[in-house]
Image 1 (cartoon, rainbow, N blue to C red):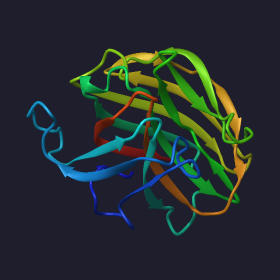
Image 2: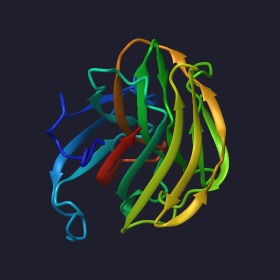
Image 3: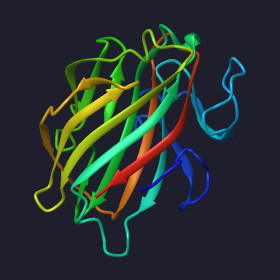
Image 4: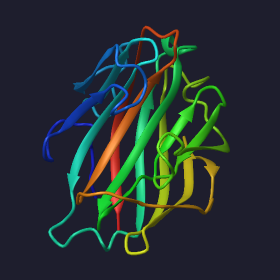
Length: 231
């Protein structure tokens, strides 16, 4: 169990950022930051833990990815067959009409493969998208029929997300199962399965990303109580 991942300490390196088309896609002209220890949101209300993560993204068509490496145990991660990824998110109304998407990822690098059970709230469709790690470059995101509200109508309040997924490190696959938003079921036992993609590394890597649209100036998001449970 990896708890309170929004905080800076406790694991190697802490939160880092990468930007530009070679890392997060989008335009190279822009800036952003991943800031920990945030005690309150824009309206002055306290963050749930008192130490939230704030992601800021500045620039039309610019993307920022914030990521946090987590070590596998000394025995490796071959035993990891099930996962629960949880987080709280607060998005300001200022972002309305300026976002392309908001992304949330618990990723595994193990056994010569990478497995990315990732979710993106795509603003244009109003739907969640799943990520297919094995797809050709630029084609990994797959639109679902599941409604996403946080980047459209869910502004100015905290929302709680709980996602369930399965992993098969030896079979090189991962499967999307269930998502809940604020206690309500978004989907259950979906069963969509994708293959992993050949890659080096042995670790977990939690990520969140903001994609700006072409009319954006600065967008931001607060994340709190990020937790990854695997067994």
